[in-house]
Length: 290
Length: 336
Image (cartoon, rainbow over all chains, first blue to last red; front, side):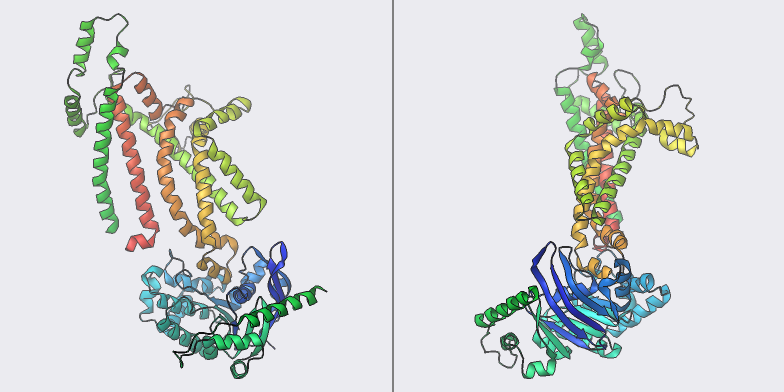
């Protein structure tokens, strides 16, 4: 039984149902599984994460489908209940560590607030937990960091703090929304390693949103490939890298730069493949309308 | 430590500012046409009378000489005597100051409460008809100046539905037990709520007239910066932690969104104090502004100087207070 099961999820711009953002998306994440969600910008991969966490922009509305989390369809819950439930069992590792911490608040309360306010821990327990987690993400001198303000820390440090904060309440599912994109390359590697390490230790399921297939090959077990809000392929990482099933996936894989061949030229996804994929999406749209 | 240094530095620049203000006012009111002597003497006074009176007030000396004499007095706390009432300027001005301060602070409180409420409500209900209505209301409030609001309020609540007093600071027949001129403040301290109600009944309309345009500015700016802040990642992150919309707005977005508004309130508050001059006249409220107009009409040079200097002191004090608040609220400035 999957921990998270998204069934036929569709979303569109509010009041403009023909501007579809998600097209009958179905995907499953088992407990403890790391699933990659790949696609180019605008493919809707971040929107899926936002739909789960209830943070879709006001201009987007869900037009159909289910998001079943731990046996409950989130979309049928009243908003307040839904929010609390998400706060209890889900967490987000955001994209940009520079804007994801509140600049006017010290680090400590930003990690402990969920534990105290939503999960009703005692303040002392929450602070001890925060300290332990900061040590776990290899932050030296956690006490000093907890008293710091975000602007006093580097981007890499802040992303470590956000990872610690995401794992703090032992969530069952973490949505990682391009967590390494905003970091520079040397830090990216460390952060990726850290996420994999934390995931293995805590056994948390992760939905890993990224456009980087290299990242997928390192941390994920399975992946869904998205184009224009439609899932083109749903497979294991092993199968995908051995033999991608969809023509678009093959082109996407071929377009990934290879570290082993620095002189090789960059190959974009061929126009013919894009045209064929677009036609496929349009066909599917017609089918659902009939 | 940092705050103390900022404070001392500002104190030094304040001294320079005040000196500049003193120089400009002193010279300008002596250069413009009209003089106090002509106002004091009956028509048909002789040349000799004029010369004698001019010499008596030291107005026969050159302007720089007059400035030096006046400046030396000011440094010793002597602002001269009013030409019309012959009382020391300092006593007159400080006697009226509490009335104007109470009026301005009350207006500020009303403006912040009203503007803050509009901004928070608009943010909470963003995208709804209520938000649109708030925007329209703000636009209307902004496009009408404070003295016109004063007239509108007099018509509405003084004439049509007479619930507030339209003139003065307190009902003249009342026995006042106060030992200072901070009537509003002292009435609370002495637990004389009957007097308090009477004073508020007099102050409310002029304060509201002053407050409405500022409330609209606060409402608009704060709503705008809340709107921007609400889209930032840390607000989204707080939502995923399970916090409700009210908590997200009040404790995640507001502390950051309020900073630009705070600076603006400081600047606008000085404009508001400037607005008391006309509003006090309109409501016959016995404050500094009303006194300033009388002083100008009578060409009471020492009194004008004293009032302008006092206004300048208030303005710089407000700006200093805003800077200190800003540093205290923004950790990036505090530690930088």
